Image (cartoon, rainbow, N blue to C red):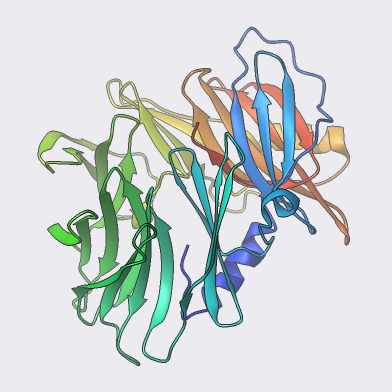
Length: 378
């Protein structure tokens, strides 16, 4: 997430995160179904704490962890990054950035206190992490938009800076995978670019120039990089790259009447077996802003789940309105996961997770004592 102009975007992110996280073993009765229940891990929060909830689909059991109590993770943390089993929670206080790295399997935590102090010369706009390094995107020097990255080696404590480009117009979320840091931005001519950094050598190995087309990035479980390039008035061009060599593996065109933002879209889309599983945006004035959908690259069939009907069913059962907050597709069980928040009263924020089949049937509603904000890859 962006640390924008030090605090502005952070505060917006904190506010938005209140609509997404938390947990409890109080599960709704499961709908009759032959579908396999997925295993999942979800992070979220209520008005007091940050939580992790691990659900075992085969046992229909969940385990709840209070990360605020166990790992001192502030509920107003700025952003969350994941690399393998390690979750990095960035936070800001008293003029300095700190982070907590927690292994979501073992629970082991590492505290990185005040690893960077702000100055008038730099405006930090995002944070990212690898297995042993932290990356900070920044504008430098004061009052300019020269875009750079500071790398902090957690083993040697060495800090190095790298300028990406001078006088950029806008920057977007980064994504790290297997020694590559992918940084999307809009240059001074309003052209979209993607810089690919080798994090071992701290060098830019390639810069893609997409012109006026918006690049949206996915990395699959095999470490291959998909780039969707298009805009609201055209079809998408889909290009599959080997992330290490950056050689093109495959190209295709498709259209789903869905506009994706620039930068990584891991939280709203995934690709498995020639299908795109994505978060569809419903046309206004729908009361439900989004819901799951699939696009088949072979048949060109686009299937949109009737999420408004599912939400209405859940609201009728709960007697409360809900706000959808998080999305994931579980390949093993072939199900969609949808997190939601429910405001019980001014002091109580709760939520839950809906498990939905590819055909759009609600399989299970798990009530939680927090609102989910993100499903973790596991």
